[in-house]
Length: 91
Image 1 (cartoon, rainbow, N blue to C red):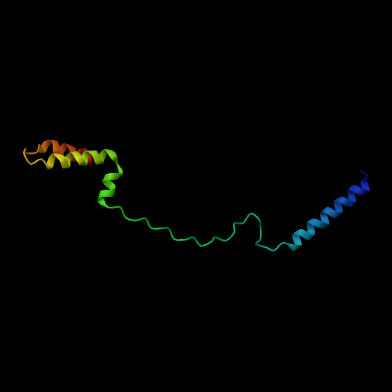
Image 2: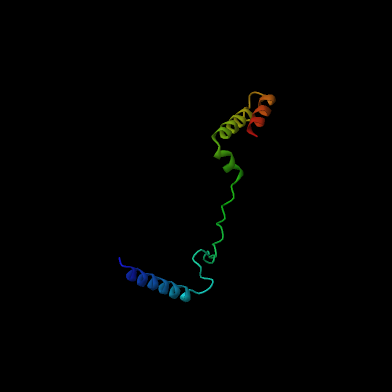
């Protein structure tokens, strides 16, 4: 490429750059974040009942069933130390 062509391209590039900067509106910088959109309120989760919390964990469900079986015996008096131990594990 000849020096005159190079100088001509250089001047054209400088002219285009001036036009671009002159057309830019202050505050429209590309690195600025767009205005935040209003977010939808978070969806409310339904409240869990006491039974839902017990049946969520299989281990607690089994221990709860054992406690209920031991309490429900009519012929024999339940072993209270065993019931207390199971309640402690349940917690």
